[in-house]
Length: 359
Image (cartoon, rainbow, N blue to C red; front, side, top):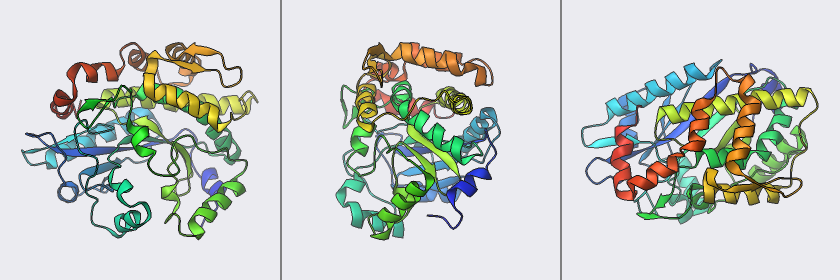
């Protein structure tokens, strides 16, 4: 897992800091289809924040650690501009959770890690051309971090509904607001993560799955939320990557405030206990199907409530912990990105995505 016990790493983090990762695709400007150019683009950028991903057509941005969201977003913007500038005239970077028209299987980059993945997951790994926005949150205290983990776990459906931006696959409308989790579910360790009763249990679980060679390392613990053994953070992985930096900022500001609010709830002893996995997963399905226009079930009573109302109430609760108003996140409820994507249709989406990449 790591040479340093995870609780010690967590204790060494600065509470309230944030880091971002996002996965991006490279496409042909004429056809709109993916191009296996990640190695060339990463070499041209020549910046450690821009890395090759598993797929040969995919790159990743990983920001530094920031004390606030605005500087993290500005670094993300800078890196997107570096990637765009490194592309030749016929190549464009786009941010999309699922390519709207690409075929089912794509090429992996040439690496030992990719070869190991192919051996463990066979053709299924080549179907994983999916991209997410990952937010790392630090709390500086192991008990608080574990409590916030369970608080965020209960709220994964709300976050997924707000970020849903992948209605298309294979040139058709799937009828879902995000088909990304459906594609990702071809691999193990996806979706709603397990309850973690203690850090010792988490270490034992990772050791068990690594010991027998089922995974190479903790990086293949692919749940939509996970403690990160290298950084001592909570890594939120449920969010679809967003077409624009403006939408990304809205989501990250909300998530950052949500983490601070949950940490306060823990300190005051007001956090709800972790819900059964299957109940969260039931809401998770409703979120990927209907986005903000559906209903979510209360995790205790089963009462159905409009997802939009759940999100508005949550935004009201966490806003005092945000750096400014969260009106940009509220705008995503009233005008969800998936509606705009559907208005464009699968054939017109890619040119638009290329146009707004640095906005």
